[in-house]
Amino acid sequence: MLKNFYFTLLTTLVFTFFSQQHIMAQDTNFHIYLCFGQSNMEGQGVIEVQDTIGNERFKVLQALDCPNLQRSKGNWYTAIPPLSQCHSGLSPSDYFGRTMVGYLPDSITVGVINVAVGGCDIRLFDKDIYPNYDDTYKEDWFTKKVAGYDGNPYEYLLNLAKKAQRDGVIKGILLHQGETNTGDTEWPQYVRKIYDDLLSHLSLEAADVPLIAGEVVSVPNSCCTAMNDIINRLPEVVETAHVISSDGCSAMDEAHFDSEGYREMGRRYAKKMYQILQHQ
Image (cartoon, rainbow, N blue to C red):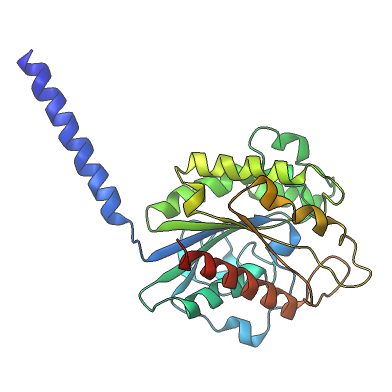
């Protein structure tokens, strides 16, 4: 009996020690944001000289091994685009982070994790049915992108997020997707499931981790503007969701923003997130 008591006491002490070590390892001044979606979140904008000037308070957790960028998966780097794939372009996540560090005190660092697949249906990020959507396009460019995330972008993002939680605190989730789901009125429900799954698997509370979703391109003759009506219904389904307008954001074609359009969308994401933080 006494032996069991001491064993239980020792186990409790060890558990408490390592739990405290984990808590101490987290920097509450390191704010982390998960970014996911399709091609606009990947980033298709031309990276210009102004975009290559980094800020040490804005970091990216590298999602893929990219020898061309001299970055390795799972390590934090000063955030200089591309922030998702090795050869992607400027995305909303870039100027989201740059703008956030401008809003926040110098003591706070912002980090992003960007896992996005151009052309994907939102359900590719559904942990239960993703195999049904991993060949939306059967061309090599699409299947290779999915394979780059080990065939399961949701789990890939989740594992990076768990790693990031050792370093800082997840403060929000950014989404830009919808073009492939244009006209599907169930889209808000699909997004809600993915959001709920992420919160559950990362032990997060919705009130602490809002979901911010951007409208698709809304210039004349764009392919998917009709989807914006559906995207704007997201807060009806997810109480902590907020939608970012794309009105006035310039585009390079019928589906993708141009560089300045991405910059402006990123600024708008940041403005909304900062407003939310002010009321938390």
